[in-house]
Image 1 (cartoon, rainbow, N blue to C red):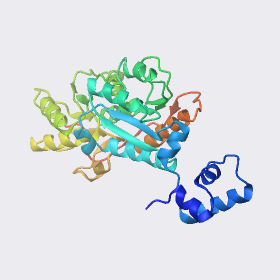
Image 2: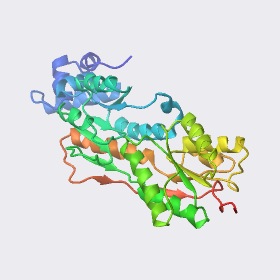
Image 3: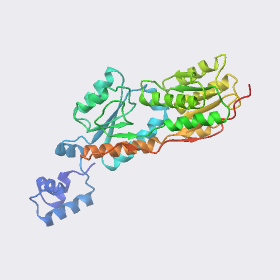
Image 4: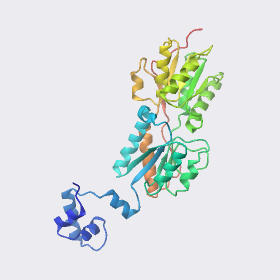
Length: 337
């Protein structure tokens, strides 16, 4: 059982009130008595109760994230596992916990309101949307928050940014250098800032190469959507010779679908993913992908939010290192026509 203040008081031969004053560094306790109480507490293995600390400081010692995506992604998309792991490493060192909710639509707004009512000290805001209404919603709570990337509208919150646009362009240039001219993109929802940003980067790189960005399918980051989008593209009278996907999950599913349709990877079709999930290197063939770093992103977001909760001001956005392209065997020269 956990050691209590009563246990410390009994072992030190003092009252619980005296122990409380000593452990909280308050006046009214002699220095010798304070040292004796601290020594007894350490020897007994006493640790402060987060609930008690919260009552004393008006904090919950928790931060909140409301994920507004298909719950299936939590079990299949490696980005979230890495991102949350990064957050947890920082929170554990500061005796904070993560409160995670999965909701959508009106339920998401209710989730934010519920958590803001004394359950968390701040939020990390993911999957920013164009004209994101959550910025004003969270601003009304009076709690600190951190956004992943800078919103397209004015925001009072610090942002931790990892821009993958140049990496997507690098992927397209890599394919162009291999002779590909029909390069498709299976993107995420265009209501997401990062979904639209990756599509724009793909389109800009094609236009720079004198090619038309006319092979685009919007999907939802799930494996099922990757299969459907790939089948749609490969059924065209002039199918693409290369496809850039918005995440590795869709790319993996798309690669499998293409192979089931008789396409050889990469002789008939080159595939590029995004995230550099651990499994990507073990596919047949291994997946060329953009290597984001969700663990580091989670760590930095948590650190900035804890700083904001403590009253620190972030002078400017925190910019993380840009993702890099990792070339593997899923990309090769364009098939001869």
